[in-house]
Image 1 (cartoon, rainbow, N blue to C red):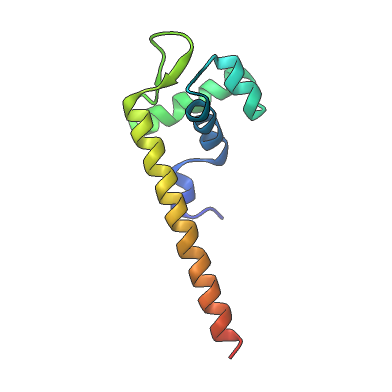
Image 2 (image 1 turned 180 degrees about the horizontal axis):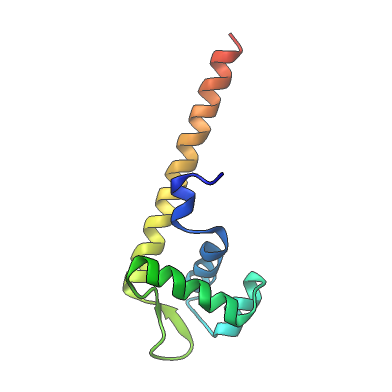
Length: 102
């Protein structure tokens, strides 16, 4: 069962955004290929995420595509949230195992 933080952005969606972020600008086919999806599936996932959020993550006004300013803000925020959540979860597991070991 996924926790609410992980539900915020699916792993595949994160990989799609990671590819766009890491490489600056790519064609739709390049991004899809790098994450192992068809071009259609890749962009449907992004469009669904954009619809869910009510904002445009990808600047499609010119080719190759790039992150929109809102998309960059969202991406940065999600990366920070997931990193902090991972630290919290790890700390709790460590504390729990220390208590159980006593």
